Length: 138
Image 1: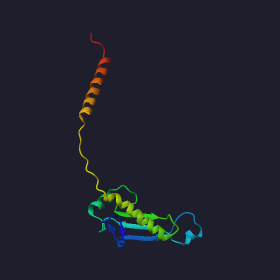
Image 2: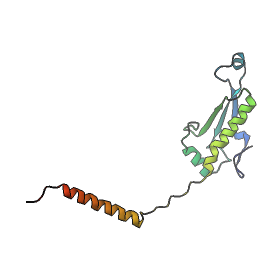
Image 3: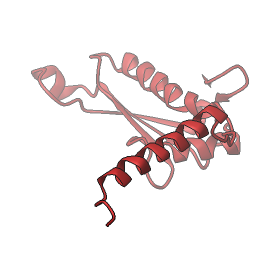
Image 4: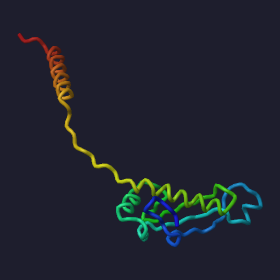
């Protein structure tokens, strides 16, 4: 179980983790050992996440979430496959956590009395300034 919050946990059966070859320098070790990890989590098929959390997560602008609602996380930070698995699970939890918070509704507000007065004073000032630029009447 991947614990996201006090009341939300994702079963490991919904998360697919597969080892892959790491990239970059490392000599013979990197060529023969699959230490990197690819984590896949299908948000839409998940039974652990509530519908509102799913919709906020899918609406998030994150390159790790594909258009068909699958989260793809690739980790190759460590030389240990087990450590990379832990990091991938942590990153999935970090990705989901902001979607748990319901955004506050925006309250419509009107400009205050001072702001309205300041706007009218500014308009009057601009009007007088432009009026003074006009040609004098004959």
